[in-house]
Length: 113
Image (cartoon, rainbow, N blue to C red; front, top):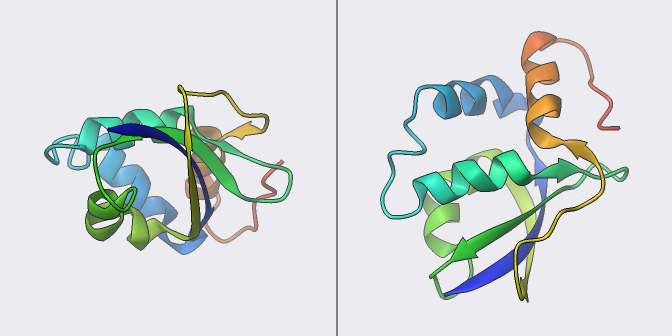
């Protein structure tokens, strides 16, 4: 078990689906890691460079293997993970606010900042 700093690029074309799956509880219900993924996305921020950063607890080797195979690779790409000591807060716009803005205006390009 380890906590990782995760950096990835969000596929904005999948925003409505991700929001729906977060709202309907289907991601949270995934065992054993669904609720941790949901909690992690609520901790996530969008950096000035447009990357999404979060901290996530994971039991997989390699890091996030199950999470990526089942959920995350559908919504994100360009993953970088590195082990850290504890959950961290990052500077940037809350990812959930960014996600909600995309869903509210699906045809508009939403500025990550």
